[in-house]
Amino acid sequence: MYQMPDFDSVEFRKKQRNANQKMEYILHELQALEQNPKLLLHSCCAPCSSHVISVLSDIFYITVLYYNPNIEPREEYEKRKKEQIRFLSEYPAKYPVDTMDCDYDNDLFHKRVKGLEQEKEGGKRCVLCYEQRMRKTAMLAREKGYEFFATTLSVSPYKNAAKLNEIGMALSKEVGCNYLISDFKKKNGYRHSIELSAEYHLYRQDYCGCIYSMRESRCARCKKQQEQAEKCWQIPESSS
Image (cartoon, rainbow, N blue to C red):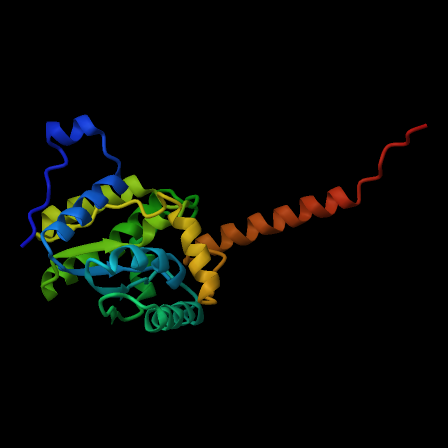
């Protein structure tokens, strides 16, 4: 059983390691110890998972958990799940990557965020959504005997990695399973996910997942289109 380093110790605080450096420290230790533990990795979609799998699959025996009750409509949920499965079947991971599916329970998400429907993307509603998905991952990791759990969410520049890691560390203490601290967007991780998405022709969605993020994304797009249209129809001032 791998013993997690004490990142709160004076030694680590002096070095001021960020989340990605802490993860790299753990990966280096696992390589040195020639350990390949089992990791339950929550994934929101194939594009986000692509870079994360490329980083972790040389170290861990990974099972990808597709648990995203926030995604709707149902057709969108199934489309993203299908792309996730396809990517894993095509990517040449060093160690086999398994998948674990969960029931689609969109009602559970709406109960969780009730009263926060008008929150802006990235606010309290999103934090509750992070916690709901990561809690499920942590609980299943403990139940199924995984040594680590993690999430792909931090690869996105729109996700708060510090908040994700705060949730993950709290859940780790609660359930007794190692959380792999991370910030997968570091070292051009997000750009690499875009490159892998192009290489594997992955479907890249234009909103995070819930109907509230869809609404905000579509409204922003409409506003941009309107501004562009208004600019096109502006009559230039006469030079005379």
